Image (tube, rainbow, N blue to C red; front, side):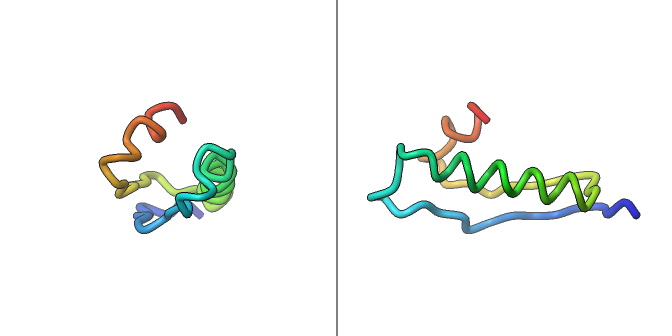
Length: 57
């Protein structure tokens, strides 16, 4: 069954763990789960300071 839309917000990595690969792991897990659940559209609200991180993914 295809689902229409999922909106993710408020995912943060504590500053002491930034640039250690945890953010990539969290996003990869999120994407895996979304694909498995067959959502048609995903919206991610992100901190403007994290924009470059999300563009790289």
